[in-house]
Length: 66
Length: 163
Image (cartoon, rainbow over all chains, first blue to last red):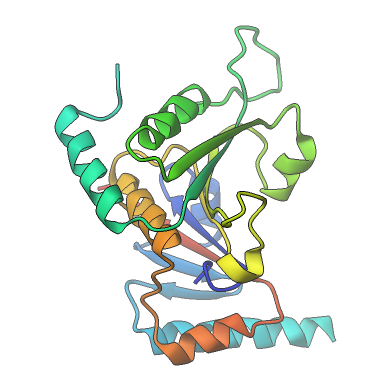
């Protein structure tokens, strides 16, 4: 995804090396994906679910920007 | 001692020579290891390994180049990539044809690894190098179009454990 658009940044985080970050997002299972710090997905999810979560995260942000 | 065994090196050479197209830059952001203990300042755990690790990979193909930055000497860069120097950062970036700074709009963004991508994450690093090099994207056309058209920042954080 990060290859498609420079506005997209993707981080792969070792949950064990970053216990504080893992705790902040309450990581109980891996892989866990956090989108803009607001939407969360646990496990491998189909593309449509990931995109739905991305849309939800972006619209939440638009809401707070306005 | 090298990080990769001879057998692994041979396998990687084959993967890189068969699957890489464009050149890829590994940008290493690290902090030199200090022999001096400075109170309140965290030493960087794997910084001293990051550069030789990247260089060892780059030695396996002529399509990989390595650029190393000292985050203490370049605080702006450290800020841009969100590091305080306690862990090395390795960026996997496409290199444009001219050899100049890649225009992100045409070649895409970079992958960032925080900490040394050894162990389980190593296969992800190799896969990312190949994907950035070949421009391979495993997403449907519809998803790709939607993401290309994004006008907001999107930050994905994927938590994994090396098992």
